[in-house]
Length: 379
Ligand code: SF4
Image (cartoon, rainbow, N blue to C red; front, side, top):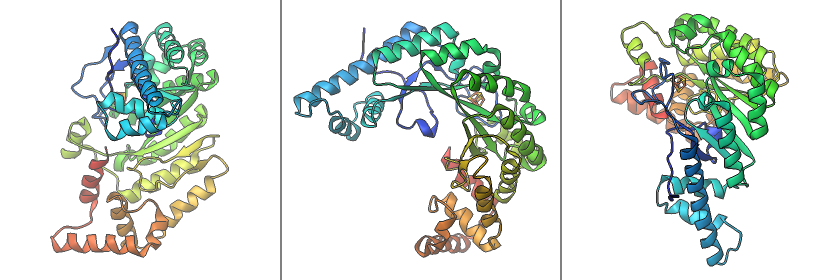
């Protein structure tokens, strides 16, 4: 029986903010990465294809209801006004997601949770085809996948998935340095990253590889940067997206930090690591920093042509005085600054200075501990 609700998983990439969310599997089948808290304590489950189809039919039922309301309200085929009204007063999370998706054109869908590729290829193909048949406005279907699982799939399977309608895969590469991958219990090697990634690229599915800046800590930052660049150069994915390591309770890495086994790099050190990464990249990828955890969110461009421009942005940060670096770091972590140019905005700059003075009056310093605790709010 079709209902007017469906299940939603906990996360999706920022670039899928307006996508319809279909929970194809529940949680993460690996769930061991030390730096990840998202699915800890939750059991992985494959969902029967029929169950996923019922969820897609539930989306259609909500969509049909909204269409009917639009017609009755005199909007005809125009859904935006009704979608907006639902967004302001949603019945539940599912209707909010459908309204948001429709408001933004109804073209993209994202298959949740952490590793949809673990589904048998014929079943995943069936789900994607059903999704596109049932909701024909969808022209773009994307999902998360693990590199390890990707490395086990054949090129022909990816081609089949692309033909069924899978447009893009988001993969957490994190690092290309084997000792670090092992320490973090990522469950994949650099060679497997390359194998899986190359097959995805070859199949014509767009690939987005996520790199975790700061993952090497103080000990392995240099190798993390250079070896990650080597892996990315071989894969040559459409997108390289960076995030910055943030450690919080619930992650196994939190205990490692507490007992001194893992020493986090400072913001300045992470920027040096990012510089080394970019210097060593020799690929044709879009480099994107679209995450609030990144100190320099403006660090974006098309490689190789924009490399010098990106390195100039890094040089601009590195040439700031210690006081201005402190001001910028706090301004970023308080969500006041979007980029380095905001330092010239006296209203914002003075606001951050006042925050620094207030902290000092309260006996606190703008140190790494404070920066790390502010960053915890972002994930
Ligand atoms: S594979 Fe992804 S979702 Fe699973 S534990 Fe690792 S980082 Fe988290």
